[in-house]
Image (cartoon, rainbow over all chains, first blue to last red; front, side, top):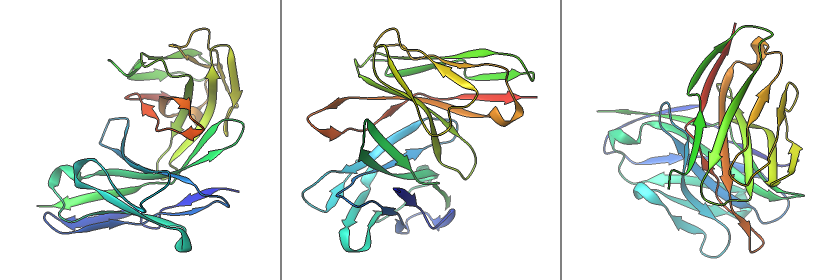
Length: 114
Length: 115
């Protein structure tokens, strides 16, 4: 069965430090991969997505993610974190079944220390 | 574009009561979804719809019902509310086409408490 794991439940970084959030997926074929961000009390917003092509994808707010097929990973990175990046981050995998199924990981909560 | 709108934002129900969570999108998306979000559990799919008049169960459909009479609206009905339905509910929509899976657009959520 398809699944998404995010090994880190909570991460704390200092403002200005670099960030990497981990995501691993289980799926037999080439997946559609997404990262979403959820600010407190808000819905989810798409940060970036990967369908095919260049394995390093750029997103909004200075985020990027790299697809590594050999590791079944799609880690999210940002070179310098801002206090406004504090939020919940969800990795997701899209699977073509009888409908466009999207499976979400459990999320990683990011805190930013000034 | 308002995107995906949900009402109400908050609601407290007593056990056994019923209610409808409203969801409307103005992007002419054919796909619509209802999720519930519980702490540390990510999002679980309750129901989805691939177009007006077509709905199907997701991962956790028990205790819920949906309808899709128009492209824009996808209400979620809770019958006989139970404490286990205390959660945050999100509606989402997406375009479907070109053989791809497209990103979902989310509403702001409804926080429901059943006591």
